[in-house]
Length: 331
Image (cartoon, rainbow, N blue to C red):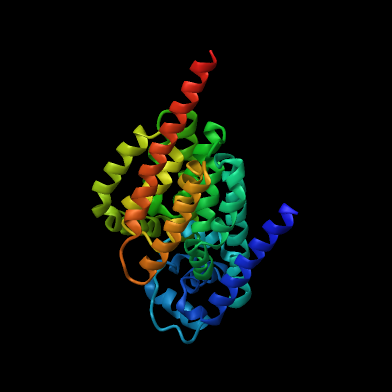
């Protein structure tokens, strides 16, 4: 019965996102993702960093599209998504939405051990249908896949955890703090370096040394002003009780380019402190309200994210103290 309900929730998320996106596809981020994937599929991967080539391909896919959305992901992402570029754009969007919905569902399953058993049925619909999830799916974005990598790293063996965190380089603006989370264990650091190296190597195959240098320069320029935020986040992640979960949520505040759909990265931290019905109601209710207000123009998102990060640290520390007191009392 639970499997049937979970499947219905996922199916609802898929249908809502696909219909919302397909009705006005030219207005969504997926057009740029599709344009880059199609260039790679046509053997023109070296052109994905050329704004003119991206705009021409966007316009060819969606003639109503007249506003350039440049390619900002590592070229490796376009290579992985190249099979979508071989499809017409609407079927390609359907596949991307299906993959994103599956990623969110699997991520929720992976995060379930962090959640009190009685609260899991409340958080699962939130993970699939909350505004950040719906927006990520409607836009055809890669954040659900990043969440899947992060959630799969939680509780994994050190090298595998590091590898998965390194692969989050597919969305580099949130990568630095995941590197900080890998510090302290050689195997985890080696895995992280391996994951980043895989993304770098695949990117090199797509755009060549010159293109890789151009992309790196663009990336460093875009992220230079976030150094202060990264430093503060790094200190808090290193001192925090749950490094991966905290790195995910603090990366939203430290990133130079955070959008509403990036909010799915707060889910691991929310799961980590979902110990009671009251906590869940507060976190979910405030999260939905914040997302809607932020979408309507009120810049309240960072305050909610900071609150989740702080609340997670306090809640986990309190749980540890309670468990320690229980063991002492039992002894």
